[in-house]
Image 1 (cartoon, rainbow, N blue to C red):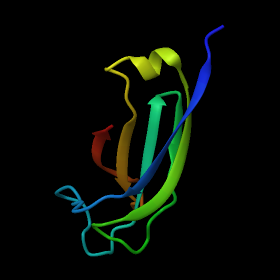
Image 2: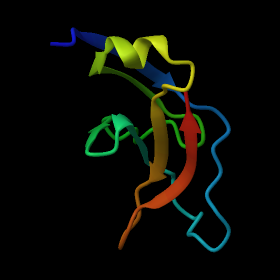
Image 3: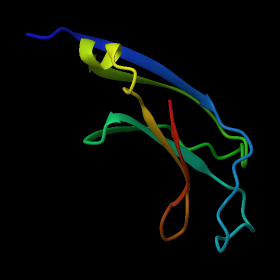
Length: 97
């Protein structure tokens, strides 16, 4: 049986986020992030209501990973940042670690 490890990352903040063209920019942007190493299990930060284009979350994400994940150069954690919207949330950008 392969050994399982816990990989913990802390998503501290983002800087200089911009809403996409055509979205409502008359309000203060509220943002959150999703992070995952397996798309079937995504973790979400709290919503930053004050940071606008420079949100701060300081949320910790524990991921269960295998020794294969830790040893491969192509392994990674994906992050998407969203702006909270009235009808739907807007993807601001995918980011990878």
